[in-house]
Amino acid sequence: MIVMEPVKGGMLAKVPKEAEKLMKEMHLDVSPASWAIRFAAGLDGVLTVLSGMSTLEQVEDNVSFMKDFQPLNDREKEILTETARLYRMSGIAKTADFTPYETINPKGISAVAILDCYNSCMLQPVPTFGAEHNYFTSEKAKHGLGKG
Image (cartoon, rainbow, N blue to C red; front, side):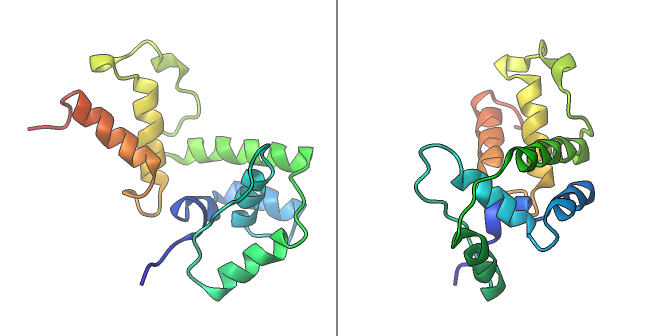
């Protein structure tokens, strides 16, 4: 049996409280996962969006907003931009602005990329899930970091 979580290993279904409040003010009965799926489905050239689902409730939620699909409007896109900022602020490094670290490149790896990947990994409900973890692990290995 394979158990899956909606959108990005569950990360985008469990948004920071401040972001959830913004979403609920716009649409009271709409799940955070639906925002992520509608964002992806509304991108130019996207034909299909796949989201892992573990429960009948998740299936019903996905069907509810995809049967009469409406792309995000401008205000909804603004709310997702704010949600992304709130995610970055809730990470381990507690900052959304890594520009002070842009010139730091130990062993050729951008400190900004490391901090961003680290935050993404630590925000994941299952930190070993996702592309960020794979990127972070492979970059460390490529440069001989984390050994010893």
